[in-house]
Length: 170
Image (tube, rainbow, N blue to C red):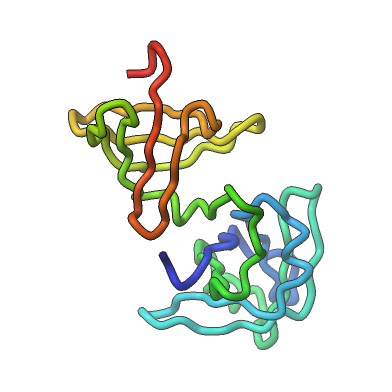
C-alpha cells in the first residue's frame, strides 16, 4: 500500500492572492475543510504546505490558500501538481471501501477457475457504482462494476481481487 493518498490536483491559480483551484480526487469534497497541510512533490521530494483557508466552488472544486504562496506566479508553480496526505491522516473508510490508489494496479483473478485476468488500470466514477477498468492480457479492456455480485474478494495485502464474471462480460 502507498504511504500517501492523493486527495486533489491543482488546476490553476485562482484570484490574485496565491490561491489555487483544486480538483478533488476524493468522494467527500468537504474533507478539504479538515486539512491542516498537504504534501506536494517538487523536484523529486515531498514538500509540506500549510493550508490557511478553503472555499468551495459549486461543491465541485476547492480553492485552497497555502501559507507562503502569496502571488499568482507562486500559485502557477503548483499547476498540475497532486496534493497528498499521509495515509495515517486520510479519512477512515467504512469496511469494504477502498482508496482508488490501492485498487489501481491490483491483480484480478476469476473466482471460478482462479485464472489471472489482468490488472486494474483505472476506476471510473459513474454515480451508481464505480467501474473497474481491467487491462486484460490480450490487450483488450474489461469493465467490471464494483458490486458485490461481481467483486467477491479484495486483499490489499496480496494486491489481489477475485471476481465472478457475469454472462456477457468476458
